[in-house]
Image (cartoon, rainbow, N blue to C red; front, side, top):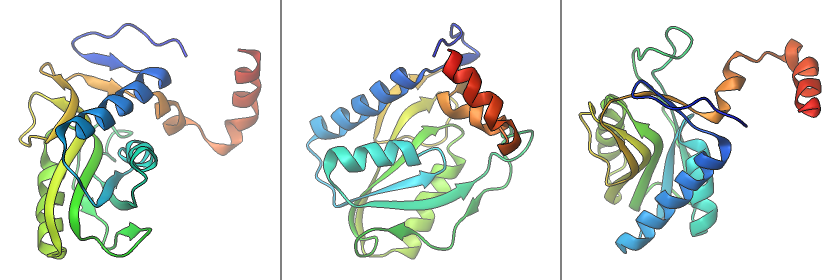
Length: 180
């Protein structure tokens, strides 16, 4: 996939770049020496990141759905909703937990989710955070990150094309992809 050139206002990310960032994040956590028991990702943005980390670390993956970017076709942050339940493959959320998302933007989601987890899951003994991107205006500081973005660009992730694709458009979309 060819992506436009990035600027201070827009960071364009290809699938290959996206996967390299996840691998770098996995390596940063590994090199820290911190041992954790479970990975919890925030859906939707952190699902792909959490999935890959879960595979690399052969570790249970939990998913917590959150949503705040629903306004203006997903480009403006609104009220934060946190799901009542966590989906996890083994046991419950306890021990040392690595909380994963794609980015820390304003920090509102990360701070609220951290408070929610500490309150709702007292069996968590330690909670650390990991993201691909940490924006400069954030009010939260992740424990692990790959890129700090002081100019706070809008990040154009490779899966954004699906945000505007609807089922009735799939046939022409697939044909276009087959032609290259």
